[in-house]
Length: 166
Ligand code: AR6
Image (cartoon, rainbow, N blue to C red; front, side):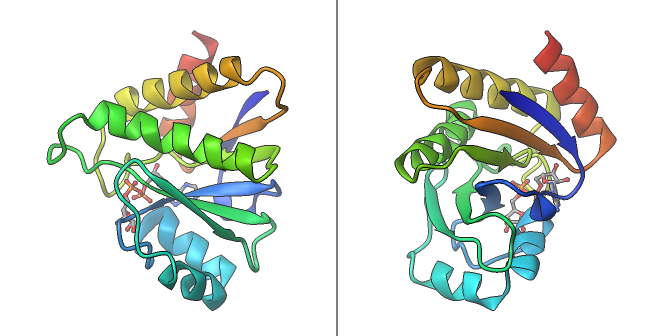
């Protein structure tokens, strides 16, 4: 099942939330900062052990003070500086979902990766997010996984609503 939530991803009660991180995995602004603030310092301590993360890849940690048991950290492409940015953005969703499967996660919330500080055009990013998730779900029909697209503002929410209905 796919749903859309308008609000703060850090308060969602699901097995995992996805962080739109940077390559250091050591925190930052936007959703990354919000997740680290609510999860607490132990999250940063675990992130320090991970050795960073390449664009399009994903790594998992515990959720600490979050309701979510896990945080899946992925690094979206920075708009205009990266070649193959569409496939890199798709990889963020695909690799996060593969990690969810591996860790027996059955509900996962995604922010709109790369559409904030990294300036990926919202409409293109939304289409990629939805099509990648739908393709993955189609390929894993025997695995129950609820997807929540967490939208922090109405513009993002409306865009997801438009393309999910399409
Ligand atoms: N809950 C849900 N979505 C949020 C929240 C929240 N609490 N806060 C922001 N968003 P961004 P990026 C939305 O900039 O573009 C960081 O500094 C936001 O409105 O967080 O992938 C990292 O360390 C937007 O729709 O991530 C990296 O350096 C979406 O989350 C860099 O930003 C993504 O915006 C990553 O940039």
